[in-house]
Length: 154
Image (cartoon, rainbow, N blue to C red; front, side):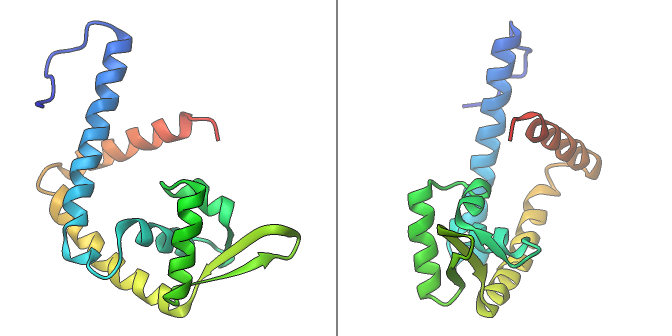
């Protein structure tokens, strides 16, 4: 469905159309990126877990904290982490201060695969985004999406 080019009639309608446009753009971009060569060895949601763990300063992240940063349900994430552990890409251990908590970290193999896919993924993103948006438009989109994220309760 083509995007509307005329302003919405009300603030509520404008908000709904803005959200729909943002969501549909994200879906279209993700579908294109998922079909690229970077994700032949690992699915996007698996890469998301490795990427999130790679940004953790301590190396270890609680499973529930990991869940706060990826787009998966808790049960789906638990199963995905189990599969990644079986492949040798992550390690899990019980949280020392909480018998029910689980800590997760990248293994050396997981870190290397994340870097390898990440380099290709970033090139794919640039090839997709740069022809569509100028550098100034990219900075403005970055500013707007950060503003939206930061306005939400945590």
